[in-house]
Length: 183
Ligand SMILES: N[C@@H](CCC(=O)N[C@@H](CS)C(=O)NCC(=O)O)C(=O)O
Image 1 (spheres, rainbow, N blue to C red):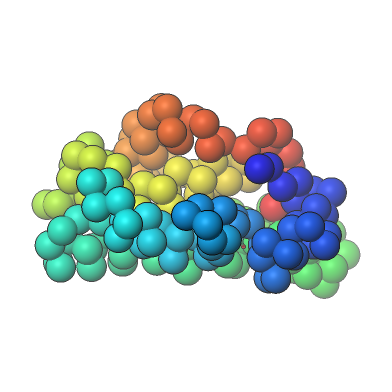
Image 2: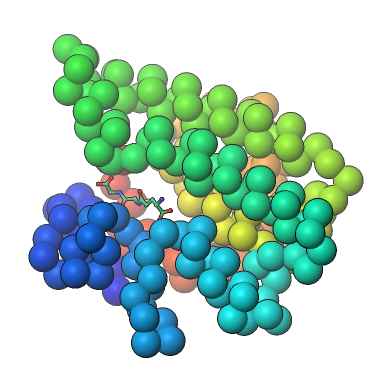
């Protein structure tokens, strides 16, 4: 079910019962409430082995995890709602501080990601020709980069792959309901 971050719904009792961290996502599946996106995706990969979320070979699994972590652990946490709200509080020009912060961390992170994609295993998607966990991490990060007008000119391959993935129905179904200008 959708959780409205802008109205603070994720910090309300109902959502805290789903995830005591007060963060999204939380997934109710197989009779359990699961949190932490990467852990959720790994659970899905393990319990739905026909999915292409993680490759079968150890080196491929490492690469998909490394690409995923580059976004979910290195870029995303610096641009989260609570972090950026704190940055804004420290500045006398909060909107400008937020925009500069987003451009720096998302821009630098995606420039490095483009270099990671310069690899023989990159295909139509981040790893090979099927969407994997890495594409699941990439699509929302590109969505966020565009919201903040991050200069993506150094990341053409990243953008091409993200747009290809975003056009697939499951990705389209997962788009945020109401894009708004907050973190
Ligand atoms: N490591 C967590 C991060 C979750 C997270 O930070 N989600 C964001 C939305 S993408 C959120 O709930 N932000 C609300 C806030 O920072 O208050 C995961 O991957 O699930």
